[in-house]
Length: 98
Image: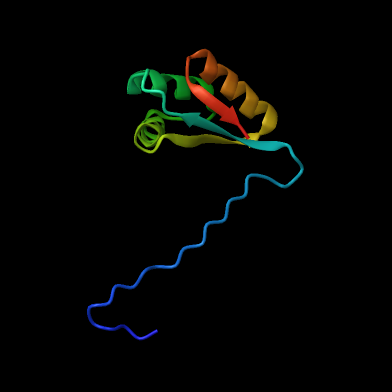
């Protein structure tokens, strides 16, 4: 398509979401905003519960949850996802495993 002066080109994006091999053994943990925890509390819980989490990434996720309403905080094995969700729920966060 030729570029026309004064016309904005909208980039085309393709979102592909895959969370596993289709064998039912992988899942994702989603945390929802509840406006009842500080960023520090959420960051601490994420760093305690999620393998490989660091405070910078935890802050990014906490910010996304606060501003967008939810975020996927972990993708991986179903059993690990359930353990993470249990830990986060015990800390008072609203969590789902899908």
